[in-house]
Length: 257
Image (cartoon, rainbow, N blue to C red; front, side, top):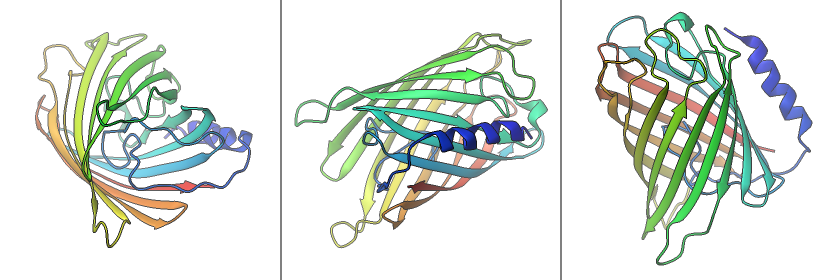
């Protein structure tokens, strides 16, 4: 495991000014708990620290445990800065842009607030630094984000493309992905402490000549307090390459301070 990467994240946290933050279980950040995010950013000056423990059971090869720390900072109006990483067991078998221990720096910019006729839109750019195991080159990911409400239901679409700085062996130089999801507040209007999220996703395979991983995910976010949100999620790649993930799960926590 690359403990230096986690150390860099903790160091960056100390550089931000201290502030009080109220987290909302209805706001969706990447991998908290499944692969989708909404088009909204945290307010300027606020900080969120998030992390999750993951398990990935693959059809071929050993299962992998992982840890995904992330810091979110409201740096400007309508703009949040994100610093994140992912550490996994069995790191030698990881292909594609997200090598175990890579450090990523991203920014999400919200263009508008949703109206009756227009969805909320946002754009995200992320730079992946080659700090991980067997990682080479700087990767660049660009993502468009849309959020649209229908009553209490919220729909989300993420479409992105990743350019690998230094593809290795049979890796593709670029990979696209598309994710669509719906979220719904459970118990509303009597209670507003839980949000359930379901998604469908497909992405280009990491290696040439393989089928695209395509699957589903289901997750829930629970408001523990005004500053703490617990999340958990499961999913499966129903179609894809021979070593696709037949089952994956996440348990995580988001804290504002």
